[in-house]
Image 1 (cartoon, rainbow, N blue to C red):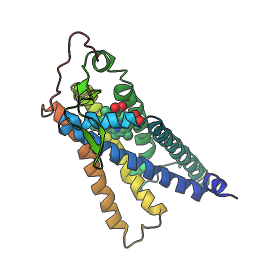
Image 2: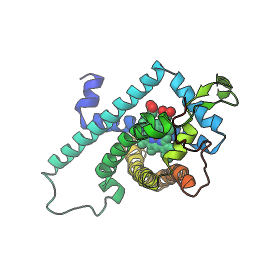
Image 3: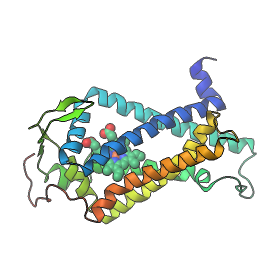
Image 4: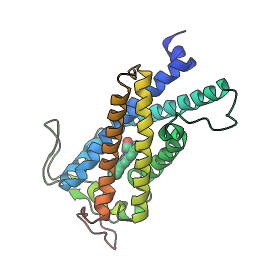
Length: 256
Ligand code: HEM
């Protein structure tokens, strides 16, 4: 069997696929959070960053398609492995035998589906601007960069460039308490999903020996708490009035 056949056609191959795609997705969520935390700085930061990403053009699409493929493989491998486990046990248990399983492990499917639904909503909310069409696309003026934006020391967006005002869009987006609450619950469930996901990753890598198990669990727990708090900080700061938009929502459409 060739490598692709081995990865997709065997249980251990599917576990490896889940681990590898999981690492790719964890990498994305960490990078995304670090990028988003720039909202706490001068608007030049997050606006320059968003402009830089959009300037990547075809490369951005390569990354987006790569992420989408990783999501599909992750869900496919999880589904097949679950069905296989169920078959090996001769169907669902007559009673729930989950004494040793943690709450995070038992709720992986549920938290996974909620996170997926959140991402679809999120893309409509911020990326497509669908839910924001009356505010972001039509009413918020464009932002003029005050300073150049640099990535790894290289200037990537010049001062004076007109860019989308992502800073105001994010803050206005979280002024709605229901939306903010949904984000907080969703990132909470995502953090919970990551907790068992990282545990399983360590298991697949063969690192979860009796000696290291507790330490690795602590690493996963600290990571998930930090990740949750980082995400909570953005809608949380808007809700308590610590993050203010640069522009008020205009009553009439302004040219972008
Ligand atoms: C407080 C939390 C978050 C904030 C403030 C936030 C903010 C944003 C913004 C502003 C964009 C649009 C960027 C642009 O097109 O200019 C975006 C895109 C996106 N976000 Fe988030 N996000 C948050 C959490 C998350 C989480 C937890 C996930 C994943 C589970 C996620 C997944 C994505 C994806 C997949 C995109 C599309 C990226 C692309 O355009 O290729 N976000 N987010």
